[in-house]
Amino acid sequence: MQEKHTAFQKGELMKQVLAACAGGIILGVAVTMPGVLLAFRPFLSGKKISQQSLWKTYKTLVRKKFVRIREVRGNIILEVTEEGKMRQKEYQLQDSITKLRISIPKTWDGKWRLLVFDIPEQKKRAREALRDFLKHLGFYRVQDSVFIYPFPCEDEVDVLTSLFEVQEYVYCFTIENTKVPSSVAHHFSKLLVRYLP
Image (cartoon, rainbow, N blue to C red):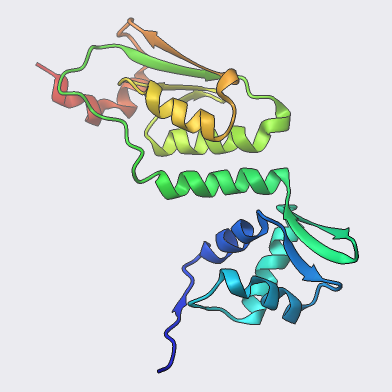
């Protein structure tokens, strides 16, 4: 019986190859297209993949500095860099983002949650990813590192900041003043209309 193969969805191949590199992949003594395919084959079983696609993915990971090549006792080892580990965390969050939702309460306490952060430049990638996911969750961006949301969201923020290892740079304040800039009120108008008397 012929073995069935399924194709990778867009972006999935890079995720799988990066995950395979987490433990260190031995490529042998030379980095060649057949050698790369042979090294990754055990991690891609059951998937239909061409040598060209895998080679292109490998080259992209190297170019973006997500992986690096080291020679250890005559073997060429492919391993994940710090940048690559951050990318893996982004993939991890993307996988769970559908489950990450901020609950909308039956009654609103009229308070606002102000998120402020000052993430250092060496964690720039984490800072940018955090901004993207906050916007995805519905936060309004007041300034570059200031976001606002009307409902309790501390737990969800904890999940995001812990994944990106930036908890110490992020602060969440509860504001009791119900008066907010018109741009903020407009952004959340459809969400808050249910609480009007």
